[in-house]
Each structure stands twice: as structure tokens, then as C-alpha cells.
Length: 299
Image (tube, rainbow, N blue to C red; front, side, top):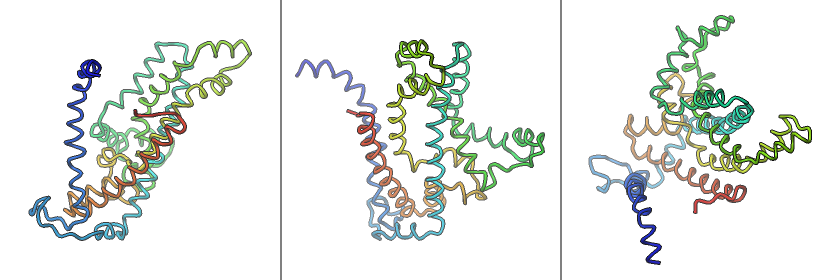
């Protein structure tokens, strides 16, 4: 036992800095959850003589006329992001795997992966410029075909789909790499045997490639359920404006405005606590489903 502990001690020491960071920034701040049940006054301090209001903050939030719309926006945007974020990388990775030239394959793979490394602060500025109704390259291109100019970031009909499309464009390169790695693990002999039997590329894809990466597809699908209420604060915050609050306001930006701009700290914490409980339930369910269908376990 001592010999094993001595052998594994360096590995545990490597985990120590990350463990300390998690405790400091994830567990210690949990003490602030009690603000959700208080009429919090910052001058009195976190552990000061605050007035306890029970569930009043939750009732106040639930009765806000905009809360239902915010919750719907969050679910709608995040759901489509998750669905398309699973399907598009899968389809693209299968198509990319069919390319015979490794040079072209690597070039395309690198090109689609680059946006993943850019922050939404940078991409937000780029999208604001290229989607602008006055001089933006996208609207200029549409004008060549007689299409009227579209205010992608200022029209409630277009804004949520602009968010979804731009998020999928930014992140699908990463998902493609995951699927390509899974495809490379399929036995090449299966494709050779299928070729001898007269199978074309479609038959190979449907009967070999997709079944061969089925467990990865299931795993990524069920684990993504835990992100259902995370519609992307960074992206929305950098792209939205008051004129698209109706279709683009999500729980995270709602909390930001109520808590930091309106200084309603108890109400904002109540919304955050509500989201945390739902997310915990979804994450727990997703890990159960991941083990049930993909035999995925953390330990």
C-alpha cells in the first residue's frame, strides 16, 4: 500500500493545483447562495444582519412578465445549438473522411478548426461588421440577387437563428475532430470486405462508419443534455441589444442585467440558483444515460 502511494504521489501532487482552484472558485462561492433567500444589502456584508425573505425572490422572478420569454429563448436557442452541434460535425466528418487526398483533408480540417480558438469578443466584432445592413458583405452579396437587406442582429425574427448559425460555425470544427478520431478507430478490414461484396460508399457509411462510431454519438448526445440551459452568455452578450431582448435575452444575460445593472442581488441569485438546480438535474440524468447507453463512467 505504501509503495503504491509513494509511486502515485507525484500524480496526486499534479492534481493539487487544479483541486485548489476548484475549491476556491467553485465550492467556496456556494456560500453566496443564501443571498437568494435574503433582501441583500451589500453594505452589511455577506454574513451581516441581512433580512431573510424566504422564497419571495423566487416568486418575484416567476411573476415577471419577461421571465417566461427569457426561459423559452434559453431553451430554444440552446436546444437548436445542441442538435445542430451534434449533427453537422457528424455529417462533415463523414464527408471529410471520404476525401482521398490527405493534404486537402488536413487543410480543410485546419480551416474549420481555427474559429474555435477565437473568443466571442473578436468574433462578435467581425460578425457585427459583415452582417451590418449598411455595408456588410453578407447583405451586399444578397443584394446581388435582389434580396432586401436583413438586419440580422437587430431583427427579432432573425437574431436567434443568427446566434445558432454563428455558434455552430465556430464550434463544429472541434466536434469534427472528435468524430474523425472515432472513425480512425474502425477496422479498415471491414471496408475492404464491404468493397469485395460490392458495397458503395453510401453502404459503407450507413453499415460500417455510423455503427462504428455509434457509442461516441450516444456519449456526446447524452452529455450535452447538461448544457441545455447554457445558451452562451459570451456570444449573446457581445451580439445582442435592447431591440432584440424579446428573442435573444437568455437566463445568463437576464441575471447579468438584474444583478449587476439593477443591483437586485437577491433576485439575480435566485435566478442563478434556479438554473443551477435544473442544470444539476440534467447533468445527473445525462451521466446516468451515458452509463446506461454508452457505458461511460468518470471513475
